[in-house]
Amino acid sequence: MINPINISTNPICYKKTPVNQTSNPQVLQQDNFELSNYKSAQAILVRNNISFKNLVMPIEITDKYNKKSEGMEHLDLPNIHVYEYPDTNLQVIINSVSNNANKNKIQSSLSLYDKGIVNNSSIKKSLLMELIKEKLNKNNIQASLNEDYDTFINIDFQSNTSDLQKIKLINKIITSPKFTEQDLKKCQKTLINKLNSKKYQKATAEIKQIIGESLLNSKDETIKNIQNLSLEDIETYYLEILKNSEAQYAVTVDKSFLEHNRNSFYSIFNSGISNKFQKTSERKLINARPIFNNKNILIYDDDNNAYLTFHYPVMVASNRDKLIYRYLELLEFFWREPYISEESSSQKYIQPIELKNNKNDFSNSGFIEFKFKPTGKEKISSNEQAIETFRAIIETLYDEKLASNTLESIKNNDKEIFEDILNKNYDSNRTHELLKMYKNDIFKIYETIDSISIEDLRDSMKQILFAQQPIIIINEDLNPYKN
Image (cartoon, rainbow, N blue to C red; front, side):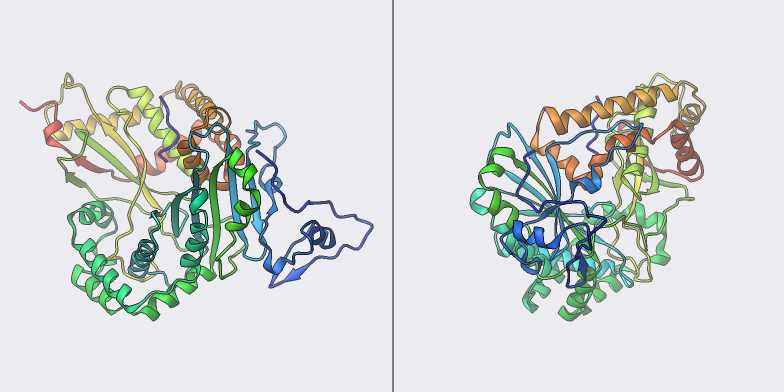
């Protein structure tokens, strides 16, 4: 009914030991990093005197994230472990699953988190993504590039025993790419063709109407700007990105495969990386701008699968935000079935390539969606009356006293689903989707769910559903009131 996916063995590692308060422990420092709370002598001896500068095996830091708070329900995840490679600051979250249908299947997602670029550029980023895709294709690497609300880039990749070394190649491509003038010309043409495509124009039409033309270049200006970009422009831009990025791998692997390939498996993720990333920390949105709609926007789309679809723009700053918005959709569905479709789902806006480079960043912008599918038996004679009916339904939910009970049932069911996917009935695809979405926040998923109250949802309704205008997508072919 409710699908949360819209929105282990102990590996060889350094042993963490508490610092003896009466001693004078040494803290090893090299290349501007500190590894505190580890006794350097013991750490080096455990790894046969391998120095931290060329460390290929990680240190486990699971306890940093897997903390149980007193009085709070906590989901124990014995198969998920977090590791860090001090020489690159790369963090890897590994979920070793049992009973995987394909024992050699490894699902990996490499994410770069932008910690704040002073002069970000939608055009430069779009061209850079095309260049990276081209580089991956040239090396016969089947990987998909995408971005979430809080990432600069995600690279999803599946491998097995024979092609595990391709992870090293991906790392090299991402951290020290060597693009050519031929690559640049080809990708500029690809990006211009994308800009002219109906698919792109349709996908970005909504956000363009919300932010307005003043923040956008014309298509001709954008094409000219793409053509004027040089390799040096892209390389300088990307070096700034890498210098200010955190990096994480989310990995789902069969437990038996991990047991038989332990050393090669743990060493590969740190291979081929040519730079040191920022330390993983609590990420804050630095440049992202909130998005708000006060316009009456109607979009007619015969491909829409509901008579009326309502989009309410939001800025997503955390996994907690994602859960709040999804619970709001589910709450509306359970109280107003069959009018609100279960197919409603929040999505991320695609940032337009035409966006001007004047510190405008809408990369964390998305929308809450409600699909309105009335039965046709209501006394509605026009689109305007249907829209008013939907708005009345939203307002009724705000004052519904029993809505808090429904919310608690939704939350409890969500917990059962998380536990089932992560600890019981392993499905590597669904498990990896959750791991990729939540990363090291997966350890506090119960605490995050429990922190959400009916007042949080009512506040969201006031600030998002009542304070602004929805974007309304209309499919007249599905109008149940037409004569």
